[in-house]
Length: 341
Ligand code: SAM
Ligand code: SF4
Ligand code: SF4
Image (cartoon, rainbow, N blue to C red; front, side):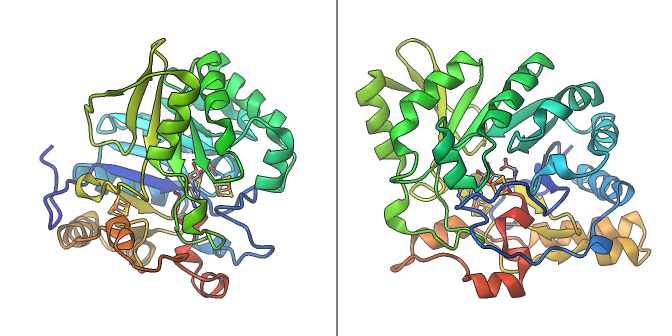
């Protein structure tokens, strides 16, 4: 399949599919507010509508789908959707990002349905820090969920950690050890000023350089692993062969190779995590247009794409959160938990 280039020649390859905007955690860096405006239930795409759109996207070159949310395991009947996605030969990769709270209940069903890879978000190994960070006392369930993914036979398991100064930046070596112990690869993510991160401050970002410095002091020499793809994580290796990743979205944005787009649970399609607006594909799908029309609309949007949100933000003199809480209440599509991260 010849990939569809955007204005900078970046192909459309990777679709992040948010299946719900609801979540059972309230991570400080994503959902710090008390109240949220949810997408109307009637706007949420059915599995049939999602699959129709996925088929149009794959016809344009998408070959990787990552199921996300909100918390994707809150979506009723998710394995049925996964089974259908897994049956699409055009999809080379099918993965899910979850907070892990419900993974014990769902890991085997996901595996049986054909899910290929699981990434679990794990920010801390300390129960009290977890509780303060997510406003729920669910660390034991997350750890058990990680074990459930292993037992279900998922290979290539990953753990994602958003690193925040003064919160969990003292835990990097312990998290690397933990990941090694459970046979997963951990990736440390710089704290981003995305929609929803209303408490973001530049001085709470722990840079890639600072992370490497801390890890080097605790774990010894670190070697960069040569890159083999356009994935956002840079990979590194410790002396004992343990590998880990860093996603330096704030200090070293990777917009130049970004082949990702995001479809929200209500069918709004964003070509950048920071984009102010998205394309309303639900209106087209429910308006009765044929697949050729959908395809033309999606192709035209991608071909006109010139987004490089993180690079633009890196150049701002006084960087502050993307949107205030009041703006997010007016425009919930700006929220990270709606866009799928
Ligand atoms: N609820 C699921 C989870 O947490 O894994 C999936 C959705 S969540 C929005 C997807 C990813 O976005 C998570 O790994 C989360 O850590 C990341 N994320 C959310 N807010 C972030 C921020 N301000 N900076 C960096 N990553 C963030
Ligand atoms: Fe945390 Fe993911 Fe929920 Fe955001 S969507 S609050 S990152 S668990
Ligand atoms: Fe891609 Fe936008 Fe993220 Fe840059 S900021 S890597 S263009 S999604």
